[in-house]
Amino acid sequence: MPAPGGAWSGTLQAALGVVAFSLTFPATAWGLEGFGPWTLVAVRCVLAAAIAGGCLLALRVPPPERRHWAGLAVVAAGVVVGFPLLTTLALQTSTTAHAAVVVGLLPLTTALLSALRTGTRPSRTFWAAALAGAAAVVAFTVRQSGGALTAADACLFAALLVCAAGYTEGGRLARVMPGWQVIGWALVLCLPLAVPGAALALAYEPARLTAHSVTGLLWVAAGSQFLGLVVWYRGMAAIGIPKASQLQLAQPLLTLVWSVLLLGEHLTPAAPLTAAAVLVCIAVTQRARG
Image (cartoon, rainbow, N blue to C red; front, side, top):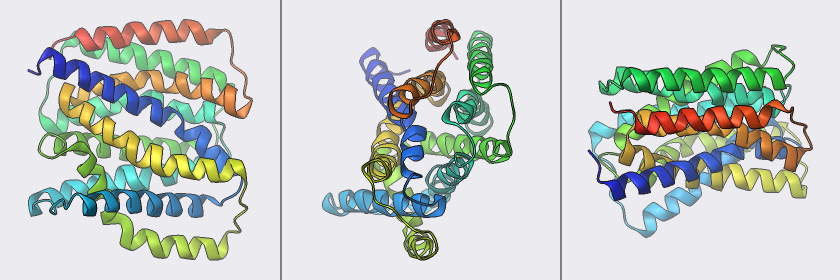
């Protein structure tokens, strides 16, 4: 069981990761103003891998043991490639509010995969609060999108599954190596595919450099793809995957706030009520014993 100080620090780091992730969809929407979806995903991967690789080289970090590479491949496929690509494709036709449905379901999916992968058994109180929080977020975000399902839903639900798998495997690896090295090596692992992919995408998708598109690209590369995942995996390692994943229940609401401030979208009066319900659920899951 983690020490109180370690639990507090882990919760803070996981929360910082959630804040970073909450900006991903608005930043992606900005990026799509000047870049095609394939270009945005490939270039963000190259930039994030360059940052991570530079840190690994500067600190002379030795490569992971052979037994960890399979897990790193899962992280790379789910978090570095799968989730960014699928959500970026979805955001071409979906609003950020509708895409937030995926994030609302992600904590519960991550907790389920974690239970299957690591053998953890959270309490019934934990599951009840997690289900209640997920239901509140889904109801709110679906209401925000008008209750209509779009063709992008297939991409969004696929993104949910691959990201949950990446989070679960990354949280497990972060118990045996620093969290920043987990995402760092996963990014480096994708570099041989990302570089030619970026070159090919740039050749076929015209790029238009604007303040919004460049800012969005830089944020999803440095903030969402690297720095956010560093503190997120460190937090999961400290307080456990199921509890950390429930902090992400607040992410859709944060995303909607950023959508208002950065994209000019409008919220309904249900927002503060849903926020209060989610905060209660988060408090219950953080106190529940496994």
